[in-house]
Each structure stands twice: as C-alpha cells, then as structure tokens.
Image (cartoon, rainbow over all chains, first blue to last red; front, side):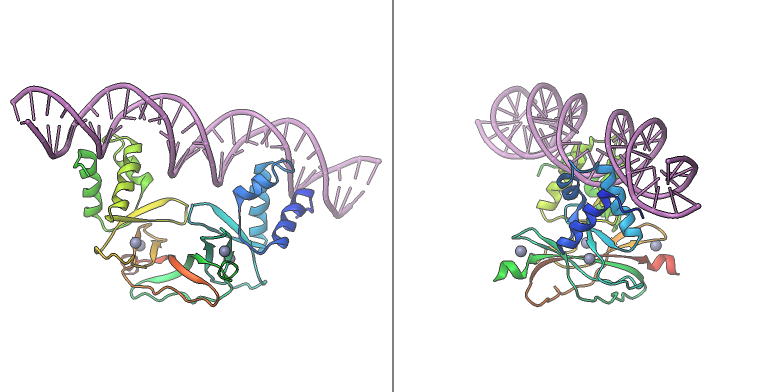
Length: 121
Length: 121
DNA sequence: CATCTTGTTGCAATTTAGTTGCATTTATAA
DNA sequence: TTATAAATGCAACTAAATTGCAACAAGATG
Ligand SMILES: [Zn+2]
Ligand SMILES: [Zn+2]
Ligand SMILES: [Zn+2]
Ligand SMILES: [Zn+2]
C-alpha cells in the first residue's frame, strides 16, 4: 500500500478516535480533501489489510472501526450505539458463537443500543 | 387499517412462509399488483400495528418477519441467514439482554450466518 | 342503496449510499 | 531521472428508500 496523502488522512482519523465511523461521515468530513470514491476504496483496502473491520448499523449504514490486535482468528464482539450521544463503538468483550440445535453457526453479529458510560455519569 | 387488496396480498405472503422477507423481494414479486411505495407503506403500518418486525440483513437490506405472539415485551431473538439456501429467518430462542459494565443496554440485535437444518440433512 | 369522508394508493420525482469505467496522477523502486 | 503500477478524480450509473400530490376506494352514515 502506497502512503498517499489521502490514506494518511483516513488512517489518522481512525487513530484519533476509537469509535466506529460511518463512510458517510468520512466522505463529508474529507469532501474537500479527497473524492468519495477514494474514501470507499481506501477503507476497502484497510479492511483487506486487517487494519479495519466493518459492520452495518441500525440505519443500514456501513461503519468501520479499528482492529484491536493482529489476531488471525476473527474476534467476535458486539457493536454499540448510544441513544444519547450517538457514538457507535466496539464493545471489547469476547462473545462465543451461540450454539443452536440443528444449525451450524459460522458468523455472528451483535448490535446493541442503550446508553454509554459517558452519558451515564 | 382498511382491508385493501394490496394489504391482503402482503399479509397472505407473510402467513404463507415463516421466513424473513426483504422489501426488495416483495416489491419485485408484486410489481404488477401494487406500486413499490405501497409495499413500503403497508409494511410500515404492519410494524406499527405489531404484526411484523424488521431487521437489517448482511447486505444492508431491510427484512420483515411475523411477530410470534402479542407480547408487549419486545422479544429478543437472533436472525439467521443460511449461506447455502439463502433463506433468512427468525431463530425462535429467547436471548437475554447482555449486561456490560458501565453500560445500559436497551435493545439487542443478533445476526447469524451458517447452515440451516434443511441444508444439513 | 347512494353519498360522504378519509385512509390508502399510484406515480413521478427526488434523495442517498454505494459502484464502475476510464483517463490522469503520483508513490516508489530501478 | 525515468519507468510503471498503484492510486485517485470524475462523471455516470445502480439500487434502496422517501416524498408530495392527485386520484381512488373502503367502509361508515343516513
Ligand atoms: Zn453516550
Ligand atoms: Zn468492532
Ligand atoms: Zn439452508
Ligand atoms: Zn425475528
């Protein structure tokens, strides 16, 4: 991967904040710095490289967040949206794949909503 | 709610099959019977009336499925996509809201993929 | 049964997220 | 410095979902 200006900007953004960021947010924030297609493509590369992972939020929007470790085993963890402050983030707990009789479960996505620690204090 | 032809068609569809049906599927299936806007609006009404519930699938598409009971308490259950046959459905097991320190969890969505019982036998 | 009221529908236009093809630019290695 | 393949910009496009408004029809009323 070439270290382009655009790539550095996006990488920096994910290093600044821990939250999961929607593509739409990034496209708007950097609309004067890069084309939206570029945002999509860089995020796509980050995912392939194992730097980011993504999920679909309650509004059907794709959101990316940083991967914690270089674990080869895809960690299963929930994602959370705070109703009050609107931040969306990874919850750093390990979820074991549920076992359901007569089914084989391969992937599991959890999406939670409620109130975050900041908004509770 | 008025019992219009269009409403009956959609209601019948959900009574026929247990699976979760995407709006796109319904719009296509009934393209000669009703306008797509009508599909959206009837599904919306069904949800408000407590007849259907919905979730966003792995492709970001909205899917609707029948509510099992007239329980006021919103039942929490996982949704499942079979990689082999493509059917998407509710898994009729009760999930308790996860408790996460310093968070208040109000809603929980689970989306699972794997292989269903039909495809395993 | 005829008529009225308003919930419901059809349609066309619009919004929004995401994708694609291709010409141009640029990081980086030789 | 030059070559070259990766990366970007741009415009056009696809697809899901929404909106405004005129027209229609379910079903209540008399
Ligand atoms: Zn919060
Ligand atoms: Zn995450
Ligand atoms: Zn199956
Ligand atoms: Zn369900």
